[in-house]
Image (cartoon, one colour):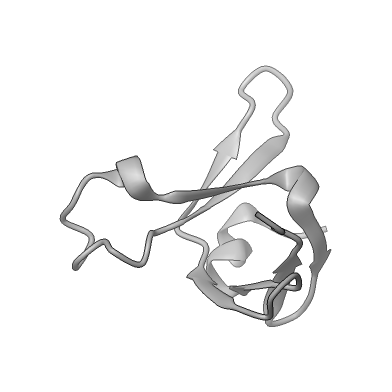
Length: 78
């Protein structure tokens, strides 16, 4: 088991193309069930996090394949 805050320390890597996507900035939690539904990564185009969150990358929990000590591996083919 892990804390949601520990996710922020892990780098996201897409196993479909090997690309480093960044670090988790936030999580989406279903308030009724308490289950994490997605992780959120700031978009590459956001400059110093002052632009709106509309362009953030949302990774559904189903796309997460492995959570390791240092990284989170996802499979996002598109």
